[in-house]
Length: 350
Image (tube, rainbow, N blue to C red; front, top):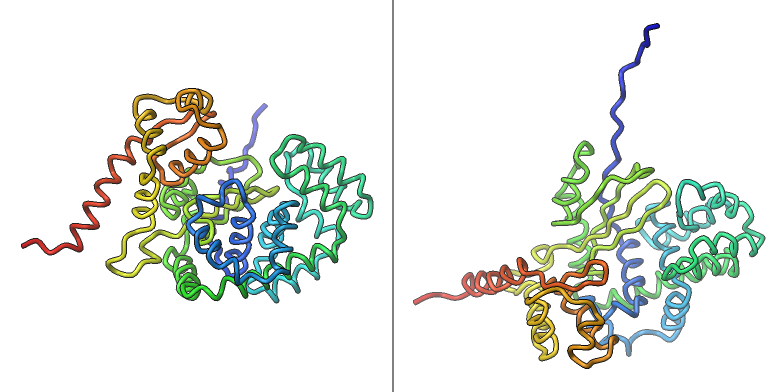
């Protein structure tokens, strides 16, 4: 018996860059309410300085979002509708059928649980259905409580909270003198890369994001690269049932005036300007250590050491893998070259 095979079609992912005011606002809200890591964000100092100008109603909204992790809902809805403005976001969200609204909000678990997710979305009037789906995320840092919140709060309340927070966050953040510059830089970032090569997603992602590694994943057919300022210096990844979202920081070059030091250079020197952090780096240069080993060696609480190590990690001097910290020797060597390069370009030799 002879088998006849039709020619195989080569399927590729759809790779795109998506940038908008709404994405930047959503990332700012997510960053501000990320209490454990917020001290490592470049914007944290400015957020703290401007807090006195924040209206009480915005503070209340942000506290609710911090407790419920509803920043995740902003990401999922914006991924679905790709709104350019807050007004468009509000309108498009209101137009979603209710089951589609909840299916968009509910986090993806895996292929085996997809029918459970879609059935939960259809059962939006039954809080128990959300509790059952939430149990699939038992032990997760935030998704279990987030799903339970979706069952406890009405659609109208969710819609009102999210759009009100976006509007008030914009009014607060747009007072920053650099806001317009950021918006122009984000817009230019999308234009300068043009069309991306869908045949080489891993290479294109690494090129555009200046280093993010991507390994192809089952069920992912769309990859969105989203540049940001508010979450710098971190790369953030989220996944839906068919889409991978990779949020990457704008480069220093896109934001700085000529002659200004890069934020990476400033952040690095701030990270090194502390006695304990320098001692930690000294020990890690001599070999990888766990947090428990470092705690015993320095006789300092785990909370304090974790805080200091996160600053070194944000500055790229330290890496962590499976709970083991090690010095990023390659970056440490290159950091001194960055300083020399910056001073050399701005110093006239006699």
